[in-house]
Image 1 (cartoon, each protein chain N blue to C red):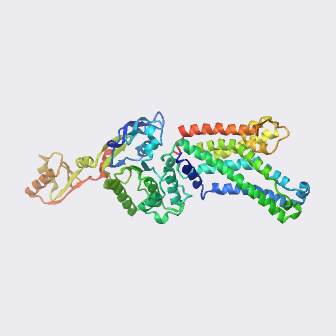
Image 2: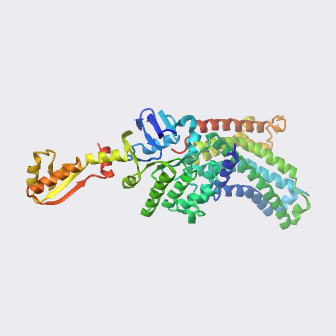
Image 3: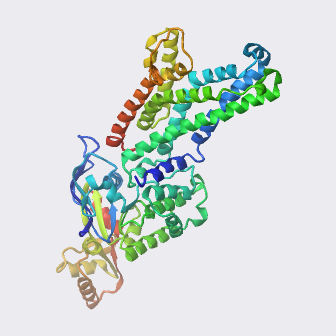
Length: 263
Length: 303
């Protein structure tokens, strides 16, 4: 336990000067910037549609954009880049010759990934609010400056999105450790996203068992979709937690028993 | 701690069930020795080093380090061991100091260890440069610095002078000798630079096709070297000398206009020379050939 915090901190040092760190920053910035650009170019139409308080529509546009593909691919890409640091630099063998248990190494990786995704949402909030006020300053008729954003909704959406992300984090940590080639986990994500679209188009209620759809299900409810609310979370978010535990346990077992780095 | 820092007991390993990289290796590395591990490419040197560090699972036979089995004491053993396996494992997006910090934090060492190893390896001026801007030699030095961070009792180095310039090779050699003499650090190293190993090691192991064909001290190796070497003599009449010596030394031969006599001891050489001079022959040249580590290595590892 004495080495727990120092060894965890090394994971944050490792992403210095790497694209993984820039991706976290860009990930939080890109969607608010893109939605702000759309609002800016179609402001007359949006001002009419949004009514007096534009923050609700701005939030809906941003969250729907975030949840359909954006966050999924952000997490997939970040996981690939983060784990590729060890493969690219041939450092697995160095890690395994240090006096630190494999279980601890795996736990550090999982915790770091969760922290990175939390950072992504934490960066998204100020960027999103700043973009709203910037739009208000540039286009006063949108009335952004006259109202305040719904911070409670923003925080709630972030929490639900984060819980929905857990399943993909678990799956892609295992894939990124198992496959040195980054293309494989990305290809899996592309294929699963196509399946997700097909499930939506087919109005399949089984979509609640499909982790790649959880982000969207946390933000919007399709017309065909019904689920129970169990305690504080909807059904699919419990499944997301379940998938996370399942894949992390499987990954832990595989990593500590079979994984020997890049031989 | 016992006599042996590294001890393997009938160690057998193969990457799959059909192939065997090496079979029943009994390696013995004494405390405070500098053990040079040699073998042609593909002999299994790096594989053995990886096994000693617990990087490869599924072997048969025992591996003991510091008198304790690797299985079950891995972390304790690794805390006393520094290593450099093949190419140095470095985070190229980070500076040299950051790379050292990572190892330092995981090992729970004081930050001043970083400056100590930077000084030892001559990297102080480049410590804050990103590793992707380092030359191959600098990366090798940084890899060595990482291995030296915990002031290890055992250093396992796979090709430690790869990519270093002649001055760098001399510096690293002197550093290793210093660590061994001053701190009693046991050093187990493999290298293809046999001339370098010759200047450094106190013990040698030679691996060929997965078999440890020689293991012993430098004195034992020297004895074999002498047994295997040849004395070459050139006189004003080599044919006449051959006739003279053939009666008492049937192994004498004439090869490429030189007399070749298998080396036995220095007294025999003196006796040979005296006989030739007393018989009226003039000696132009007497020299021993095939007397270095490279030639003994070639002889031992050739088919």
